[in-house]
Structures are given as C-alpha cells and as structure tokens.
Image: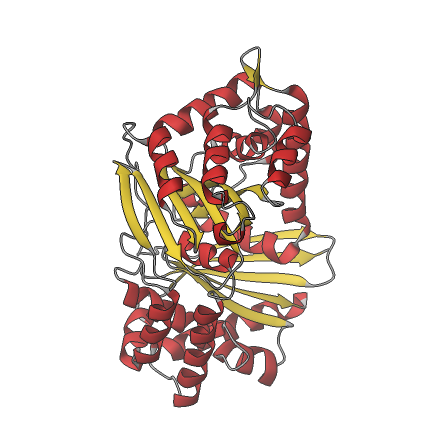
Length: 420
C-alpha cells in the first residue's frame, strides 16, 4: 500500500498515513504551512534548525540524542520547502518500525511525543532561544545559502525565477536572504515560533506499518482545539506582455542560459501528470526534443533540460553553453518549444517519455523518504493520487492532451549568467 489516508484533527490540521510494511523503519513529520513572506522566510528557516537541537525536556544536544539512541537510533531533522507561494517547515523523525521493538514499545508514539515537545515546549533561556544554538544554526544556514550561490546551474535557475516572479511571493527563497538571516534577533525568532504554532496550517504525515492511533492521539492532544486555516493562495500569471531579459557575469568557464515560461497551473491530477509528461517530452530525458536536437544534433550546449512546477504554473529550460552560442541556443530552444506547441510529437517521443515518467513515479515507492517527498510536493492538493495511480494515468495521456497544455506555454524571462 502507498495510498495516503487523510483525516482531520481540527480545522487546518490534518493527519495523513501511508501504511507500508516493506520497510523496517517508520517516518513521522509535522509540516507547518505558511504563506511565503520576505519578512518571515529567514526566521522560519532558522527556527526549524534551532528547534531540532533541544527542547525543555532534553535541554542540550547530548541529552536529546541520548533519547534518540534509546529509541533504537532514531533520527531527527528539519527541512524547508517552497510549494507554490507557500513555505513548508518540516520537523521530521525516523526510527525503527514498531513491530521490531524488543519490548513491544511503540517507537512511533514516542517519536510523536518528542516532535510535539520540540515544537511546543522548546528550551528557552530568559525568554529566548539558547545563544549558542542560534549562532551555530545561523552559521550553518548562511553556509547553505552560500552553497546555493556556488552551484551556478541552480543559481541561474533561481535568478531566472526571481526575475520572472519579481512581483510574486514565489520569488522569495525558501531560506530567505543572507541579509535577513544575519538580521534575525532573539526577539524576532521567538515571535516567529509563536506565530507559527498559532497560525500555520499543519499536515502531520506518518509512513510505515505502525498502528497510527498512538501518534494520532498525541498529535490530537497538542493540536486539537486550536483551529487554524491555510491563508492565501498561489498566484498564477497567464499573460506575458513583454519578455524580460537579464544578464549577469561571473567567474565561470561555462555560461548558463535559463528561459522561464508561464504555463497552465493544472486543475486536476490528470492535468498535472499530463503537464509533467509534456516537460519530459520537451526536455526531461535523453530522448527529449531538447536533448536530441539542441544538444546532440546541433551541438549547441553541454546540457539542455526542462522542468515544470505544476504548483505554480511555470516551466524553466536551462542550458550550459559557450558564451558565443547563447543566442543560437535560445533560438534553437524556441524552435523546439514551437514544434511541441504545434503538435509535432512523434510516437517514439511519447512512448519514451511515458516510460520515463512512469518509472519516476514507481521509483518514488522505493523508500519512505521518496514517498514522503512525493506527497509533500502535492501537499496543497485536496486529494493527491498515489504514485501507482499517477503511473497508470501517465500511460493513458493522449497526444491531444499534451498539445492543449503546450498551447499555454509563453516565454516570460531569459536570464544569462556569462563568464567574464
């Protein structure tokens, strides 16, 4: 089984389970969902890291990890994700599945209690988080932000999106800016914590074979009776009045070209699968139009790939190119997008793309982490289909459905990162 079963603890708080007995471990996470904001993104990111260092019951790193070791070497970790115009702050724990515990104890219930203690009862010193914890996590978060800049391919895609969505919440980094992280104070961090536990929508996700009732009961005791709602929605832009262009220089040997497109925000799971398939046909596999024609036949770039974000309704096509080939590469990419829009899709392209997408869905069943990632990406959908269902849908998508979605593609932004 890999189907998600969702029930409500109270308004704005859901508890979802995925029963699967193939693994010896279980996984539990609390996901706090809040609108992206430049004023709070960095605080929320830092807060997630600080919270997982200690709590009042286990007030230091040593005592907390002694508790995790007592739970058969359980692990605790935070993560930050951007889904549409929302920031998702996750506090997660993984540990031995209950059926393997030596004394019959419920590891999942213990992990549920620990996660709730970390979130609701953190260690505060004189009303604020521990100085050493904050500064260590601030330093690591800054290093994480710097590492994104040093990954030039990822940086170029990020800059294209920032320019394309400059008047939208989606332009905000999941970690916030370096300057915002440096400016966080003890008071603002505590305020961020109080704001999240009072206002953020919550999705609790439990994966494994353990009976979920123990974890559900603990989550209900902490979250029950505290209704909240998901505020706002993801803004989509369909029209493009003028293509935005931007060029930056850097000390790089291989220039980067990123083309940002507006496309349809899928209204159903079938449309979402079809749009993912469209992206694979265009530039998501070694048999795609971009790979075969722009990279292989014309030898214009080192790589050329497309990626669709269905939750936002945008698509990026990025290439690694020689500087003097940027314009030719852009023209070649534009030609392939035009062929897709006109319905020039061969049976071989469609079949190969379906096989690749189906394998991607099925492979998300290979681990609890991959399954959680699959469902987290679809967190804002009321009834997400399972990976197995998505795989079946992908097989039945028609060429006409692809062409209809491709008709919505509009070039919005062209960003070049050029070696100097």
